[in-house]
Amino acid sequence: ITGGAGFIGTHLTQALLERGDRVSILDNLSTGSFDNVKLFARHPLYSFAIDDLSNALVLDRLASQADAIVHLAAAVGVQLVVERPTETIETNVLGTHAVLAAAERYRCRTLIASTSEVYGKGVKVPFAEDDDLLLGPSSRSRWSYAASKLLDEFLGLAAHREYGLPVTITRGANNIGPYQYPEKVVPLFVTNAIDGQSLPVYGDGQQRRDYQFVLDHCEGIDVVLHKGQIGEIYNVGTGSE
Image 1 (tube, rainbow, N blue to C red):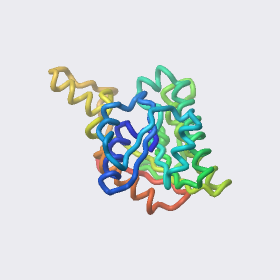
Image 2: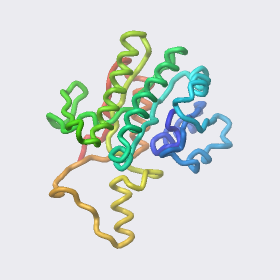
Image 3: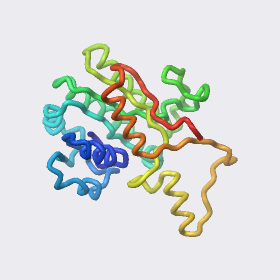
């Protein structure tokens, strides 16, 4: 699991270990937490490497020992995306390229975790995997995240079509649960409420979203990884507001 010390990666790791799977994670702890890594440090079926996806030797070693790779590692967080768009693009696109190259050498089943952000402004609701996509202008750096994750999808599907690599893609949406980054909307609302501060409202406040508990998302990833059709894209979300 790349990004295995992050919010979703930690919960996925725990679920797989409890089932009896052997799990190795790779995380540079840029947004993941060493406390999350320590949760499983003594588990006999668990190993971790604190390093970047750019370390080809480490990535190759982990891929050589894997039946499947779940690629969760990405540049995440609104502040990071807006303030450091170059890092966002390079981390997401070059990282995915490196993962696919390692997976190809060992024919690893590969799941690329994308995002519902690729739907952008959305041409219709509910979203479907074969929808036309509408992103904002490149002059707005906030769209660099969606664009980079969309390019990740293109890379994964190209590796499947050209080289026969067994790749599947999931588009996750709006997770909540323990270990979540403090800047996300639900933790931010809760923190402000506890501190007696007003809740931030953007625009007219009429926006609607659905949220899914992170363990449900992990179950969706696991189902797609084992039963999903190769070369396909799957939405993973609740479908209720």
